[in-house]
Image 1 (cartoon, helix red, strand yellow):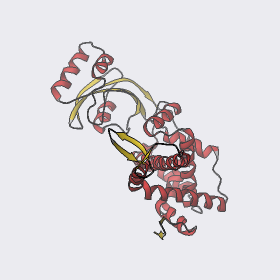
Image 2 (tube, rainbow, N blue to C red):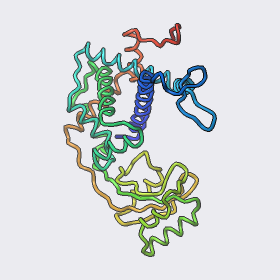
Image 3 (spheres, rainbow, N blue to C red):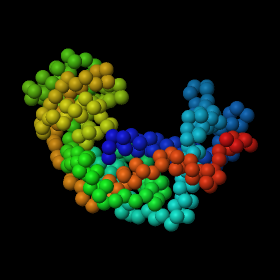
Image 4 (tube, helix red, strand yellow):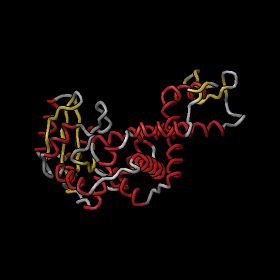
Length: 310
């Protein structure tokens, strides 16, 4: 998966989380019991700090303000795509889902590691991810309906962009983040003198640096977009057992340790051709946001605010 695709996938996940969050809120409101503690003329209180409470109405209003419109649009998009795939007789096969899973989980140690990370970061389980994959596949098949990609076009693209399909590598990486270069140099010297990197990680446990925290990063793709580029650039030049630093990152410095390096599995040639075919077809299709809008219009979707349509 390219950096751009991972960025788009992250945006999709955020929308999925917001849909799930608001959907869960609706369910919780439906399950509220008459005897629950309430304040402010019967408005249910969902949180308190000291004598001050946060009402359910305040909570809902904040969620709607932050995520409301996007969440409603995403819910309408799903209904419209579902209706159109049914009308066109589009089927989403297990092979389709497996290909998406393989692309999304690239850079992770295993499918299981990918699912664990999605659960940890976004609270999404395998069923949520499968539902999102089905939606994406359905939308793309609608967008590319009728578009023909010739075998010669696939051959030409592969010949012109061989680097996209070259066998890359994964790096088992650990990192220490500190405030200044002097401290990073001191840590690097300690490692070079024989101290265990794991011991240094334990020393720095619970000391967050900006958005990054010291620790084991596990197996990461050599171009992993979720790690600072300066760190991955340095890591790509190292061999198993090497350390490097100080590396300037996020207004501070890092020392990294490459525990191991391995080559990724060579992709199947037929899968590569299918991937190129999909990419070339999408390049000829209308942008997916436009496809979503046209489907909403086609099926008469609209957002209502009170009694007014918008």
